[in-house]
Image (cartoon, rainbow, N blue to C red; front, side):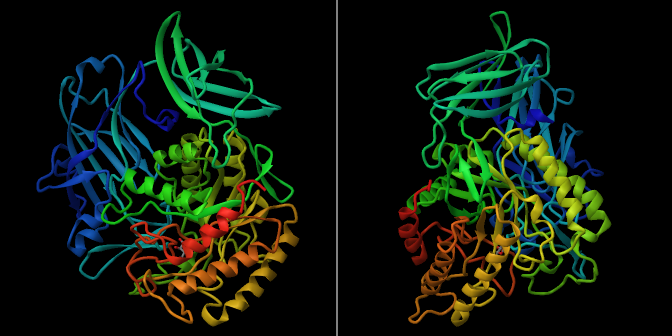
Length: 607
Ligand code: GCB
């Protein structure tokens, strides 16, 4: 399991061949592909680019909305000289479940659409020859998938997904796919824990390998100068006059790990690592012992036509927009983002709240945007009261968190974990579930980052039963939009302040930040005086919140919803998508972005 958590790299001992490009693609609505031999080739394929979501490349509605099994197939040449090592295909993600076949033999199965896995293929390949790689995916949602939803059938038998969340249920091979060659005796994991000691740092490290040879770890600074060296699978690296990683002032060291036999290098791996500490204390979030104020966004991996397909150009633009506006942070709402995003956040010094794909755990939000109301709400219990949630879903949630922490734990930018978005915390049944997942992350994250969840408005202070597990509180609140909208906005301020004061009374030492607030805004609609949906109104909503945030010194951050407009399930509450972006879907600022730029550039990253 740990091996797939290492971001793939070419080094002195490792090779990599991209499998991105055009694959054969076909829907399998009757799930007959395996029986009919599709593992060796599709009977009637169309071509499909990888990485991409399949939905928006089609012009017909059946294809866009397709729910069920679907296949990707490609031909892969495997170099013969790689026979002496381990050959694996790494899928950076396959949404939501995938089974991989090589020349008809099953080589891997993975559930969860936002984290990587590898298929070990040595025993199934023809060396120095062409091989058929087939992937059967499935994008159905249930109470045992993360994210959570339902799948139902129309009268004609067509499957439909009913997400319990508003972002579009994009799926497919949405991130990079690579063929990897690594030596049989290889580095499988690297873990680092930083300690700051005056102007120096001590980094405790642990390396996991698949063999017995010894390990050396070398640390190079940004000029390539060696600043520390240690031997052994476990030890401490001492770095004198350390350059710390700070918000919007990043510094990254290169950690090179080698398995050695005398002078022979058996395996080599490296990672770019920022040295910093994070902790929560006395109503503050501290990075390197200094109090931070978080300015940033909830985001989505979403763009026109590509859907949730990895898009380096859009990502770059998002970071440039965030820098322009004065942001220093974001939350990976509502799933772990592509690793390239975290490397960019490492380089640019963004504080990332890394969120698990755990959204939709609130029954009254069931398909709340669906126009048809096709899903019946016939389940009398709250989400966490369901037995299958306490057993199966909990097990899947725990495994997903293990995969997420394993993948993301070395990133300096990853400063906190969000274990759920808007769960139903109104009932005591949520408590053991929450304790189980929060204890797990406390145990497996050796850096002991702060942990939290995004609280839903229907579970306010006094109702929420689970806040004791969170190290800091993160609130999603929609005064000025879903409640107290338009002319009633001033009432929203009063109600929000009353709730905040109650939270502070309940948790007097925990910092509070806002992880969502905002107003749907159609770019280009101007109204004097304002009305809801106009750009003027979005500015007023941002001003209302700013006044609330500035009233309490235990509020440590503001992340409006969303950086950009994004695609949603169709329905009566959305006009071609969620329009709460401060930027449009093509990444241009709305009026309120200029207000936030003025505000945020005047607020320092560190208090
Ligand atoms: C929320 C959800 C987010 C939605 C947002 C909205 O509370 O966390 O996924 O997009 O509200 O705009 O309704």
